[in-house]
Length: 328
Image 1 (cartoon, rainbow, N blue to C red):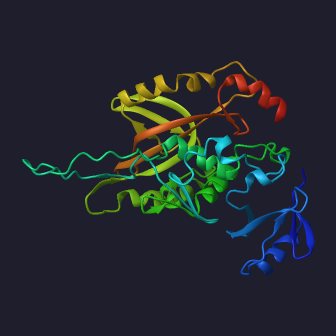
Image 2: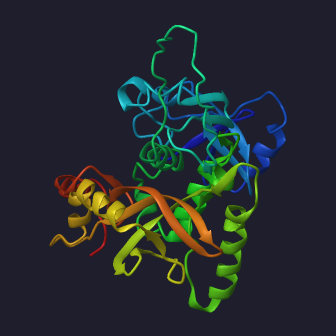
C-alpha cells in the first residue's frame, strides 16, 4: 500500500517533496495529519528529528489498514498488553517510560545494621511487571519498524539504516531516571577509511561509563549489534560485534556457557545449510572494567533473517522468504 497523508485539505504521498513544508506549517499548531489508509483517515502526530516525521498515535495501531506501515494489532493480541501501563507507560506520544528488571549501574551495597529487626507485619504485594533486556530489544525493534517488511526496503537495511532507526526509536524513552538514547550504543557502519573518526565517536559515546557517580561502582550501557564470532581467551570469551572490529566485548566463561545452553538453537541456526544465512542480533548490558575494555554483565540474542526480520526459529525462514523475497 502506498502511504498517503491528509494535511490541510490536501493529500500527499509519503514521498512527496512538498510534504515536509506542509508538516512545518502545522507542527506547532493543534492540527494533526491523517493517515489515509482507511476511509476517513486516522489521526497521527508529528515528531521533529533531522526532519519532520509522521508517527502513529499511541493506542491507534489497530485502526490502520492491515497493510499500512502504521498498523499494529491491539496490545492484548501482540503480547504488549500485560506490559502497557506498568512496564511501558506512555505519558505522551513522544514521551514513553519503560521500567526494566535490570539495573543500569552496579551500586555499592549498604547492609542493614546487625540486630535490627522489622516490627511491622509481613506485607504481601502483587509482583510488578518489568521489562527484561530481551523485552527492551523487542521494544526497540518494534518502534523502529524492523518487525515488519516493506518491498521498498529490499536490500536497503544496511547497518547505517539499522543504527539510524534504532537510535531514533530510543528518542523520548526514559528509564531508571535517565534516557534510553544516552544508554544505547548501536555501531556505525564500519569503513576502514573512517576508522579513526568512528572510533572517536564511539569513545565519546561510551565515555559516560567511566564518569564517576556517588555509590556507583560501574555505570552500564546497552549495546545492540550483530554477533560476528566468539573466541576463547585466557580470561573468558571475546565476542566480536560486526562493525566494531577493533572493540570486542568480553564475558566470563561460565556466563557464556550458560548463554550457549540457553541460545543453542539460535547459535546453531547461523550455520544452517540455507541460501540466505540468518543473523544473530545481540543486546548486551556492558560496563567498562577500564577505559575502552568492555565487559558483558548480561546479554540476550534474537535470530533475524538476512533482511533483519525477526525469526522465532529456522522453521519460519521458508515462509519469510516467500513473503519477503531477497535477491540470490
